[in-house]
Image 1: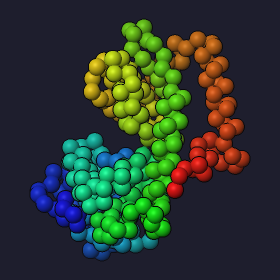
Image 2: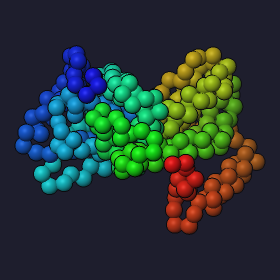
Image 3: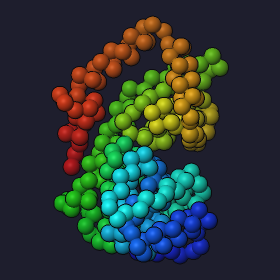
Length: 281
């Protein structure tokens, strides 16, 4: 991916197939491209739009679990976010974006991808397009609504990450490993797992998120975590196994913390929604 989003080399088969489908469909219809709500799913979908040479107005991104096409739109996708092709394309897009706009702007885009908001895929799409075509518009202090949208999403995700890091409680399993289950309002386990790997480098641990069906596994003294997708049955088992290890005092403490978080939110908004009010702009 060059600075204008153009293809520089041949693409993996799954990317080529999606690129061809996009180009063919866009000749007659608008395209609503469904994507998995993770960085590899969203950013790779943006990259496929570039490879298909679609204008911004020809393509719209949405979460795969809430597609609502407008009249004249055809739904395509999603790409397999776990595939090597999607991962490689994501890396190419973000590296190109970082070269053109700086590390902080690329970091905001990546954080926004972790948001649970339904608007996140399209917000990231517009932001990346803007950065490639008009990099001066994504600099700090801009009032462009595309930049403000990503700033707000990344702020929410970062606040959720900081909150989860403070409140995550690990339980010691019989084999000596640590286990924790959390259900944050953003897909932050990939980011949170990396932080815990730095703090608990000598420990073997599992950090599971049943809500987003993902877990981070860390072996003792490993440099990083391994991310694994979970099915609903395994998520339930992990959550149940963890709760069985807790003492009654620990269960009470968790109930109290849950109560505190619910009452810390402003009336009429979700438990985490108030955090955006304190997020620096």
